[in-house]
View (cartoon, rainbow, N blue to C red):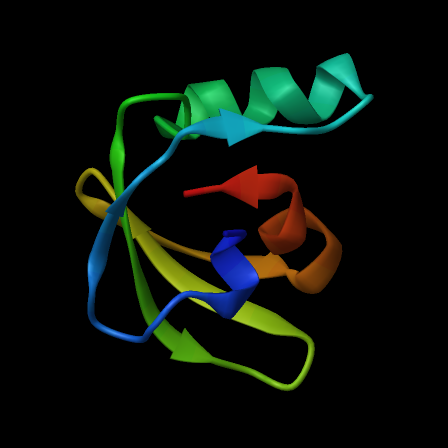
Amino acid sequence: MNLFTAEIGKEYIIKDILTNDEEVDSFLFSLGCYSGEPITVISRLKGGLIVSIKDGRYNIDRPLAEAITV
């Protein structure tokens, strides 16, 4: 299942990130978003999600949320 279809408030473990862009992969890694890390969807917005990764909250758009497998 991808992150965009995840339930709000439930903690998931990231299984894989399916992007073809090394810059995006590096950016996500710097946020702590990589395989094996917990991630929680805080809320849904019109074009994306607010997620909690480690001690931070981030806004990610729909294509990126769909690229994160949980």
